[in-house]
Length: 219
Image (spheres, rainbow, N blue to C red):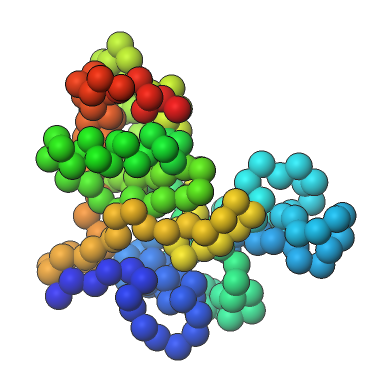
């Protein structure tokens, strides 16, 4: 039995369904994002947080904060029943982590991974960045890995303990978030398979060195 997030159907909104799948079935801690303020205060639509210059409008935890992220389906159901349009934020570090890069470079990287035969887990495509979900990693492991390479794309961001990513089908100030590679749960597994951080970083470095325009992965 294979299940793909976004095709599950149950009562409530698509965001509630996705949040319950993450929290209840996969045991991924989630929390609502700040969302957007549509009241028109301050000259139009803006992030619901107090920052007038919010760099990621709507697409970050605010109230509740990231520490409130939970796998409790009762809390999740209440959050998205009261606030059905709030973005779905995944707290990274314990169950799942991520590495992200700019959207243009992310699309090139996926094509390079396919050519190299690299197996990926779920990949999030946002208007400005792609995020590749990976198995949890420690900062020490990441540091040792990066020290082994003389070149790593400088635009990579690492989402480990204390970090977060926004999951589909969220929509925020920068636009809609979708799956570039959908989460698939294979028979006998409880949650989607996730590659190790080493697999992703090593493949990015290899793709950058092998391709004539490899350095463009930096942008």
